[in-house]
Length: 331
Ligand SMILES: Nc1ncnc2c1ncn2[C@@H]1O[C@H](COP(=O)(O)OP(=O)(O)O)[C@@H](O)[C@H]1O
Ligand SMILES: [Mg+2]
Image (tube, rainbow, N blue to C red; front, side, top):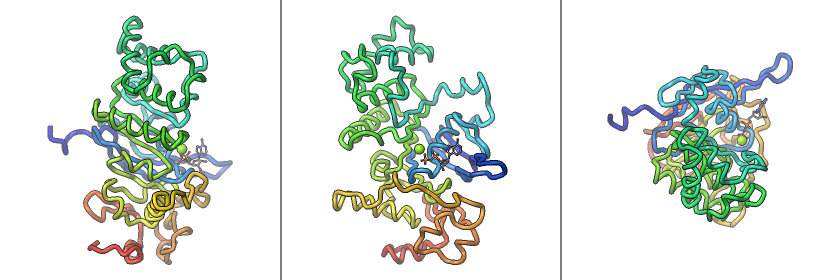
């Protein structure tokens, strides 16, 4: 089968999440998200705290129900599966969260944790699992003395390596990483990202890498989806990021540059939460913060439209943004 024909590992079709917020009010945390992730790809999902990234991840892994749309895993709609059928469908999906300590029981040693993963998934019997656990430690560049230690005896970075080792040990079709490096020091974060790239190369893994820091996400993602107030506002190749068109992505990019230029961050996205209406049906959700917003932005939500091959944007004012940023070229 040609690559273009091959079924995507993950396909989201018009996925939405509505939470009940009080008696008769509803809160739309995710709005009409459509994304495709092919085998061997790394899709980065970036946006500030509260924009709906984790809710989207939790729907993909069915830790929460899907309110609207379809989630297809290797071509199969899993959004309505329950019970055993759901568990079977999720054999091939692994998730890595921000806090590795939360994944461990404090009384489970590192070795047992790795062995349990292999045994539970029916990959090896207990007797053979210890040897494989040793190999996994080597793979994630940890000394095998650590196999007998307990979670509180390891650093956050070491423990996250163990969690990643277990995630890849089951040969998953999809690995979802939600802020997996956000709690780590910058130098440790870089090492973990390097490890993820290496594992992807070795095993042809498919990643969805979620984070609030564009500078981090862009280092390993091939494609990037930018979320704002529950919706994807721009999607493009990571290599094309400098040509981003949405005012929000431009703002993120400029704050990334400021890190490199002056060694400090002007805007801390983790502290900046989406506070307003969160994607009501009318108007552009970004308009209150947008320097380009005009009357049309209050009236109509801009659809996510492909402006160039592989580059989609949801904005009424792309022309004005480009003039302001000194970008040239045709729409
Ligand atoms: N179980 C829930 N019930 C109600 N609101 C929720 C629930 N989970 C998340 N939210 C809200 O949905 C929005 C998106 O949250 P989240 O997906 O965690 O964002 P992110 O991961 O991008 O920081 C937030 O406003 C959050 O408060
Ligand atoms: Mg989150």
